Amino acid sequence: MHIDHIGIAVKDLDAAIQTYETLLQTPCYKREIVESQKVETAFLQTGESKVELLGATDSDSVITKYIEKRGEGMHHVAFEVDDIHAEIERLKAEGFTLLSDIPKPGADQKQIVFLHPKGSNGVLVELCQTVDE
Ligand code: CMX
Image (cartoon, rainbow, N blue to C red):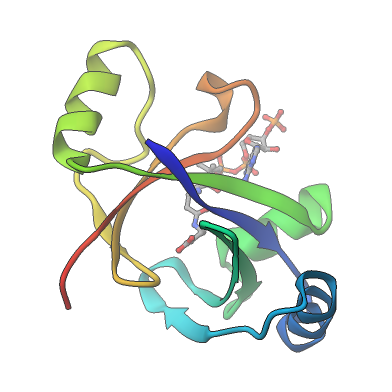
């Protein structure tokens, strides 16, 4: 596993893109709506990893709920894996709570699955695997 990206929940995606473009001195290279998650994402490359800015597209998005409860901030850490199905089985056998047994389409050509933050010291962990489009 390696860290693919860090997800940051933001209220205003346009403003956050400007902030992180200035901070990282690199342009946002992709914006993408993920309908199934009710989020709009924006990606910036930093070294071998990425920052994923996450804005809600709907009032019942998990990002809306997250910001209402905890404010803007670090939302999840995503680890890239070679075989997401094998990792799901391995982590289930180790006692982790997976939010789904089946990977779902995420942004940036990924299949994704989440581990509940209660089982990983308060951090929402995403596993992702790059897929061909
Ligand atoms: N990081 C850490 N803790 C989190 C969290 C997060 N991102 N989101 C919620 N929590 C905590 C809450 O603070 C709460 O803690 P307490 O019980 O101590 O108050 C607990 O988890 C339960 O939270 P909740 O508000 O009741 O929310 P739900 O249980 O309904 O949902 C979660 C929480 C993690 C299951 C849900 O947010 C989820 O399914 N997330 C995965 C999907 C997702 O986040 N998609 C957006 C990213 C999409 C992408 O990258 O493409």
